[in-house]
Image (cartoon, rainbow, N blue to C red; front, side, top):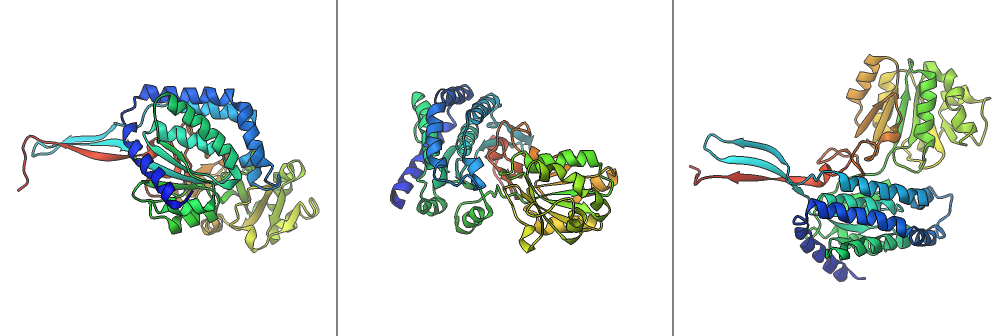
Length: 418
C-alpha cells in the first residue's frame, strides 16, 4: 500500500470519528462485551496466527514474551475488555461552570481527542487495549503495529471489525500496514490524526518524536531504579526488589538498577540471593557492590559494571547495582539515568521517604513497594493506552480521562463586548 492509499484510509477514519460521539454508552459497552466473548470463542484462531509471528522471532529476544499470546493472556484481555465496558464514559462531563458578571454562562465540558494514532512494537494485546479505550472515550483509532506482530494484529483487527460491522459502524479503527515504510506517512498526517502515541523502545519513541507533525505523547521506555536506604527493612526489600525485577522482565516497569546505600553493602548477598540463585538474574555491579558480592556469586551471574550498565532498559534477566554514600547521591544517580517512568525507595525513615517522593521527578514514585504496580489496571483505570513519561496533557498510566480534551461552552442572552 502506497502513501496515497494510506492517506485515503486516514481521511475515512477522520470522517468516521465524528459519528462516534452519537453512539450511546450502552451500545459501546455492548460492543466491548461482544468483542470479549468473541475473543474467547476465537482463542484457537488467535493463537494459531500468533504462532506464525512467534516462529519468526528468537525466543531469547526480550520482545518474545511481549509478543506471545496464551489462553490465560487472552482470558485476561477479555476480562479487561469487560472492565472497560463497565467504566463510566469520560465524555460530556462538566468540568467547570460559572456565570460572569455580564451574565454569560461559561462551562468547560470533556470531549474526545478525535483520532488517536498508536505506534507500537511486538505487543498484540495493545491492539485490544487501545481499541477498547479509544472507543469508550469516543475516539477513532489508527493502529501501526510492527512486523513482529503482523499476523497477530491482522487476526485481532478481523475480530474488531466483525463486531463493529454487526453494529453498522465503519471506518473508526484502521490497522495500517506493518511495513516500516507505512510509519512516516502516518506521522505526517496532521490533517487526519489529532495525537500520536508511541509505545515501545527508546529508538521508536525518538523516531516518532523527531519525525511527527502531529502532537506526540511519549510513553513506554522505562529505565527503573529502586533505592535501598540505610534504614531499609531487609525482608521487605528482598520481596519488593525480587518482584520488581523478576515478576515479568519484559515490561517497562521492571527494575533495571538497584541503588544501595554503602552502609548496607553487606546485605547484598541476601538481598539479591533469590534473584541470582533462583531466577538466574545477571548482575552488573559497580566496584564496591562487586566486592561485597564477590565470593558469594561468580561469573556469569556476577559481573563488573560497564559504562552502559547504567541508563539501560534491560527487558531481560539482567540488572545493575550502584553504590551511593547518601540520599542525595542516590537521587543524583536516578536523575541522571532515569527515563522518568517509575522510581522507588525502600526506607523506614519517614523523613527520607517524604523527601524522595517529593523531589524525585518521575511519572510514578513509590515508597516500600514494587514498581510492578505501574499499570492502568492496577491503578483502577480498567486498562491503559500507555505510561506517559512526559508532563504535558497526561502523565503515568493513561486511562479514559487521559484520552479526552475539553471545550468551552458559552451561553448568552445578547451580550456584546465593548
